[in-house]
Image 1 (cartoon, rainbow, N blue to C red):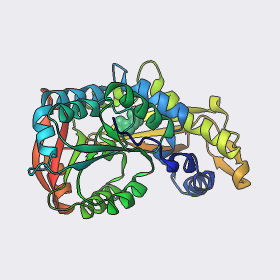
Image 2 (image 1 turned 135 degrees about the horizontal axis):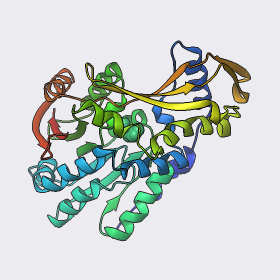
Image 3 (image 1 turned 90 degrees about the horizontal axis):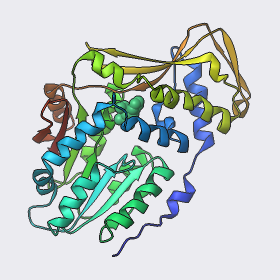
Length: 329
Ligand code: AVI
């Protein structure tokens, strides 16, 4: 066992309140108002997201689990350099790593030489992952990093040797279209010809099924969305009255945009102490808090091509609800 699990960056980057404050200042000054779903993932938010992944309505996680289980041998082979050179398996937005463990086990069983570098914005999720890997896969070399995607890209740049990058869970759907393309281009720019990229895309399907996944009967997704306001109350001294806000989620089958909002139930003012500023909300005014785009295969081809990447293989579940797409420079 040789794991280098401790990472000083984990302590450095817990929450950067100034960055959050500036984000809120801009987001709530804009029309329509918007906040980034990136800030959902504090400790409570990360725990709620784990609950979401286990909900009956939230099909993406168990569907991708099926994809990875079904195709694990082919995927592990496709990620491994043909010449057997050791490589870094970098995962962006690793979270609890439950799905990734299928691939990690497969790679270890094949005697593949690699180090696993999970990157996540949530230090608590990452610590949980590192602990569980130490217990379940003690021979695995793990190098966790608490970072945002853009910081992870910078990290990639300095990384010598072969790499395979995982971006699972349809995390890519959380970017608005322009940022999605820009991010994929920036990611592609860090890849050498022998490197590989596996991206999970949630595909278009019955609009009602999609909407239900983001508005579950138990209200866990509502709590997840509303927790953003609780976070602002705690970290920025805001005075959002949680009873005056509600979760709303809508799917647009024309564009594949699944959007979540926090809607103000009445006209109100909210004070944010860290900014020394008040924000006005009209009755039923919405804050756009999340995009969870759904894709078509031709759209994925196009997205890849525009980033200078080739689609090498498409792995899907039986019902074709989800695709893990293998890309190469
Ligand atoms: C992390 N991300 C891919 C999830 C999604 O489906 O967009 C986050 C989520 N939001 C509400 N439910 C789940």
